[in-house]
Image (cartoon, rainbow, N blue to C red; front, side):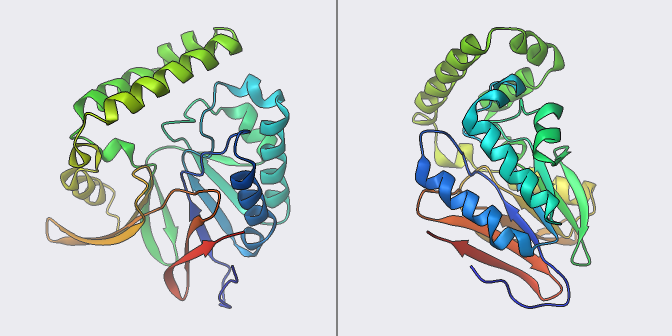
Length: 250
């Protein structure tokens, strides 16, 4: 995946990699990206769901998780700034992981000046406001009191609970219309206007694309990041030459 030669190193965006110890090919693809193309970037911004699940930073002792942290730290130490935003699968990532991985944790949403433009960054699930059941669930599990109580449970119990929640979520999604689980354009426009952003970048819905919106007499370009698979990664790049998709494969 060669980089275009420009006057400035690009900013790269990825999301929804869903790393797990059970998918060696996906892991190898992502590690190759970190050791290769990402080192030519000024910044790598991971917009959520780096992991398929994260039960708490005390799971950092697991060899797989520690290996991912080491690879991210190696990228950061090579000169690429690495920022990480929580997704719906790994919102329990905390300061211990961030220190081990050499990454900066970003709040959701965040605003950055990138390639001369005001860019709004989000995982994206907060824009799915038509899915009222999910938004109620999301609000509950993001409460500090819920997270504190959950993290006080034994690690093995937390992993069992996460597996059950995942199974329930997959069952519920089969009963919902695709439009219900998509982002609400009203919420997208509201966010772009509130943060005065000309560009919005998010993931979560797993459908890569570029969209143009006119919101209350202002305009916003929305880039949706694609999910990674064992055979293909999705990367968005921004630099002084503009915005473009990059793809990576084994």
